[in-house]
Length: 287
Image (cartoon, rainbow, N blue to C red; front, side):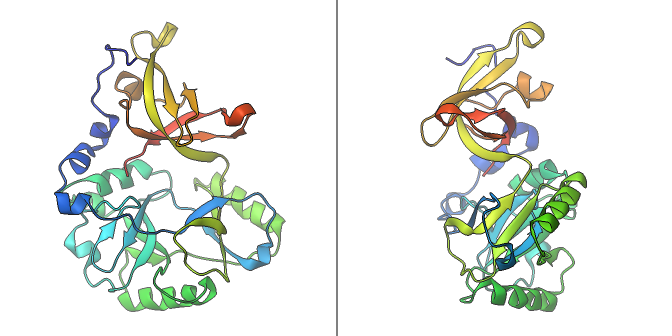
């Protein structure tokens, strides 16, 4: 049972996202989710020469359908008119990014029902693919660069892609990226077509793994956490329940994510029964 001492106001309110989730016009909220190419986890068992490597940007996934920006769940993103002015009529796939270590800033800007010009001037659209292009990624990449060069907008940039000689070079770049505040790396198979599914054509390399779950219960805290949240009991899409007791700020413990909300957690590996090891709260999933 949810402890009645804990307020049910969602943590999303702190980020200015409640109006976005509750007050959108029906037409904007009912967009079908775009069929996005999704990544699996890199485990080192691939032929590295087949892949392009880029930084993994910690922002909000943004899909441009040729007319409007959508989240991965199909929600309309209320970007300022100047931000998308002149964009091509063909789909783009990328990340709305505010810089390393600034996910909250990106999420706050993207989540508002009415765009905040000042917040959006800190956002860049880092484009990594052309979903409607019929060719493999080896061909989509130069086409993307040419398209964005013609657009010539400072806040719309192609994600830098590179080839690496071997796994040692990959791990060296990974360490440099993470030590510099980056989230990790992405590996994209050059011969792959754009397919709206999760497969080995797109891989992510991060210092931890993450996943989503639904909050099903608040556990009251004890000791120094008496009177506030001690842990969340969450449930994965597969029905597994476990507790998240770390990763929360003091503000989040006083005003925790409500039961029924979606949260992202991080973990190091899966233990017995598939339970995530060293799992900790990362953020409320606002999409």
